[in-house]
Image 1 (cartoon, rainbow over the protein chains, first blue to last red):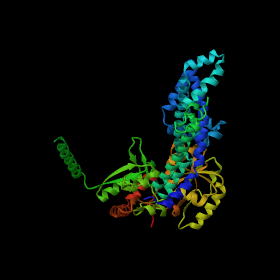
Image 2: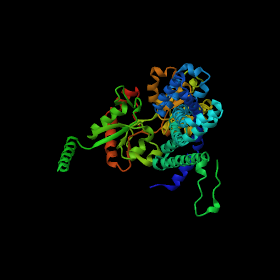
Image 3: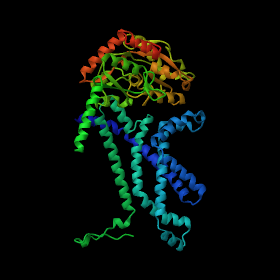
Image 4: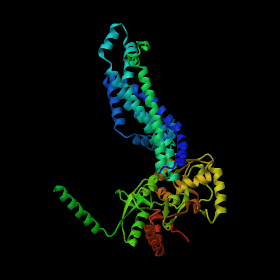
Amino acid sequence: MLDLPFFLDTLSTLIGGVPLTLQLTVLSVSSGAMLAFALALMRVSGNPLLDYPARFYIFAFRGTPVLVQIYIVYYGLSQFPVLRQSMLWPFLREAYWCAVIALALNTAAYSAELIRGGLNSVAVGQIEAARALGMSRPLAFRRIILPQAFRQMLPAYSNEIILMVKSTALASTITLLEVTGLAAKLISQSYRPVEVFIGAGAIYLTINFLIARLCAALQTALSPEKRAAPAPAQSPETEAPRHG
Amino acid sequence: MKFKAFLTAAALLAATTAASAEGPVVRIATEGAYAPWNFSGPNGKLQGFEIELADELCARMKVKCEIVAQNWDGIIPALEGRKYDAIMAAMSVTPQREKVISFSTPYAAGINGFAVLSDSPLGKLPGTGETYSLDTQEAGAKTRIDEMKVLLKGKVVGVQGATTASTFMETYFQDIADIREYKTTEEHNFDLMSGRLDAVVANATVLAAALDKPDMKGAQLAGPIFSGGVFGVIAVGLRKDDSALKAKFDDAIKAAIADGTVKRLSEKWFKVDVSPRG
């Protein structure tokens, strides 16, 4: 028995948490992506001094739960007086930055492997051809490898972004009132978990639906061969222009 | 054939289990993170004032009891969901909770206070050592609260979410202090010690027990202890339709208060008597 007026009321309160949920996602995904890119380059560098530290990082952050990572950053680091007196404390003091840091460190580990997979997927022949045409290594990397790698990893990466949106729910465990935090608060006031959790679920579903559509659109935009599908035979006058 | 044999075995097993139990099993939920009321001991076993009291009450009700641990913020929904039959988790009777569940006769009074770092400006909160009832000593309590409003302005105060402590802060200090909600009191105590919080509000017996431990050295109770009002009394939480169990708990609690069992257990675990007065 869903109480509709209560549900709508709940929904409007929960929507108040969306900006925080999105901020946590955007900040952690974007900073995580930069770290991931560096880690992926370390992994493909062929230099063991770069490769092994990156391997260890990925091993550690993929092998432990995000919740544990959030707790270590939030409650663990604050146990050290040295850190509390350091210039990092104004950041680490805030639950907000602790959540961003933990989520970014986590997504970096996963994304690094996605990026590495993308880089490795580019055919050797492509690189050889670029070199044969006189491109320098950095130029070939930028013009030939990177765009193709990016396109290859995009479907998997959109998965990772969606996972991150859901992971931000864990920020509620360290006092942040994003969508899940607000939901927990509402339940503690109303004791009606059904309406509140359905409302929270609907919000996450909407956000993730939009992200999935956005990534799919980006994927299409980056794949000219898919965009320019031959026009159906029955209407020859609307033949799509060929790209590329 | 095999299936039939299985059924017979299952029926036999069910019959013997039913016969060996002395009546129905009452499942009681507690939080397990609210020392000394209820907490997990070093061996992982639940212990504390409410665990011993539950044993006493069950003996009086002549039922077998099973005590389970449940996160605080889901403790009422899971009662409604019939995961267990009763809640004994230092839960205060509030009008809001009474809308969804019913309560037995109270077995304790809720007394709450502030803990702060001794060397912080809040170390000198007025009224330390005094006790005010928000019901019967309203004027005195109001004077102290007004004094505290000045000192708590802009301060960050931690409370456990969905507790009377959070209601207290929202009632009296909503736009004055920055109120942060935590899942457990242990977590807000960590943040008090790390300096993220300027003060915490919780049940005074729980704070006193935590402050006794070496990891909270440098923190202390400050300001008066409040009772009554939003803190109310502590009782067993039950489903509304479970009036038979409520009647049993009521009788058992009344008997345990009358013969001094509640007082004895309270003094054992809290060093003060928190038996409900009047």
